[in-house]
Image (tube, rainbow, N blue to C red; front, side, top):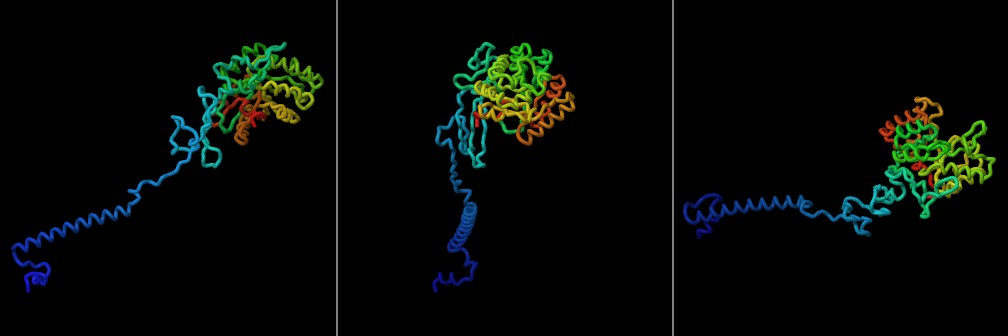
Length: 391
């Protein structure tokens, strides 16, 4: 047989001796080894690639829908991939803004809503200056009135607040301008979130109003109304009574309203009998609605008809939950304030009324500072009034 046949028959791995054939066989073995290594590397890489295919493929496209797609996005707007937003333009581009962000997960209306509070509320740096468009001159003096463009004293003179839905407490301290020293102490010591109510029989009301507004307080005007057992129990000069004619009561009302400016709300001083008489109360509430003022019922009379008349005449309305200083004692006042806090946590807000006694001012000032730390927001009375014009 030929030498090639002998090579085939030779046992595997045995040499035929030195020479050219031996060198060729050694070279062939080296090539095979390299080929095996290459195959192992390629095979391993392929297995890894197949196992980790998702690492090589591009991420699947995610469709992000945004309500901004319908409008050009502002330069400062966040990327659509971060949030789905809808922007409601502010009434004007400059000035302070309050931004509320609503989540999209609830399925309701979502996005960012931008409001400009200066559209409604007076800047506190000029809060002591009356808006001439909201003044009607009369024989009694300057009277509040809606402006020709529809603005109301209730809106323009309202103290701004956060607008959030947390527990809110409004505290209204009345009787200011009766005692000059007491008025000065109340304005200086009470936190600016506390609403101050002026007695129309007081002195220097215009000066005290300006001081109160400069320090950030919202203010109200007290209205003397007939109580039971009048005149033995007497609210003071120009009291509105059930026996007076509507014209006479309106004249007395306008006298009280003319005593100062820049207030949002009228509140009763006494008046359990008057507030329960619809015939007597109706002309008063209609006048307040015409002038763009709110009304605060101190809550002392369960028979008051004020709430129904307020809705009818478009008057922003609030009713007090408790009088905090019926007992002029620090411990008793603190207990009433704590009750207000509990009410606010239960229903969202509460209103307490009191007078500018020294013990009341001291106790309220201390309690307000502590209540803020517990998450209670102290708000002006306008913030918790039900407004028929904003349903």
